[in-house]
Image 1 (cartoon, protein in one colour):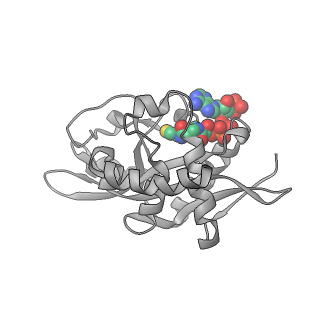
Image 2 (tube, rainbow, N blue to C red; image 1 turned 60 degrees about the horizontal axis):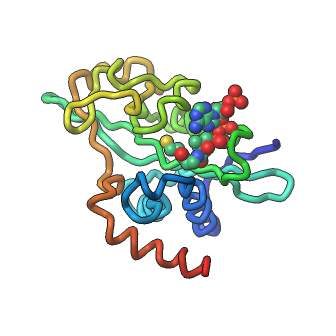
Length: 203
Ligand SMILES: CC(C)(COP(=O)(O)OP(=O)(O)OC[C@H]1O[C@@H](n2cnc3c(N)ncnc32)[C@H](O)[C@@H]1OP(=O)(O)O)[C@@H](O)C(=O)NCCC(=O)NCCS
């Protein structure tokens, strides 16, 4: 498949939110998520207003019909140690339209994002995601960098990558803090209201 990755533009916003919603509406998700609806499309919308990095909001376009088939966004996050605050990127959500999944779209988006983030001078990425998918890109458990989550825990779905070698050395012993946009409990009511627009369109 011929995939082009480019920066997201304003005209893409709604379609990207629809794709995000579709990608995260897989069977069992709603029940497991417990929030009553998928919420990553709200995150994308909100990240464009605060904490998101627009130059690292990228879309994957299928070359033949110029259709957007995937999206990735990064946001500002930090590792706090007793001595300093280390700025890092948080990655996600990443979404691929269900009918285009497992065709290399996610891979194209992640490699393009890593390359661009390096060019922009970012030092490291830390995020929560599927431990069975991300190691192929070079992501390692955050524990290997000596960084824990905000509560001081480590587990396989908390991963990271240095974009500048050695960048996370100053973060050893620190805790990772991401935007509160990722806090689904805190944002539950706003997400529900936002999702109504998508439900109305489906009816
Ligand atoms: C997860 C997701 C972004 C992956 O994108 P994708 O385009 O489907 O994946 P790719 O085709 O680029 O996968 C690259 C490789 O990883 C493998 N892979 C894809 N999804 C995988 C998964 N969930 N677990 C393990 N391996 C996976 C593919 O088989 C492929 O292997 P290959 O290179 O040997 O052929 C996409 O499936 C998606 O949008 N899922 C729903 C939303 C979601 O879960 N987002 C991520 C939350 S952390």
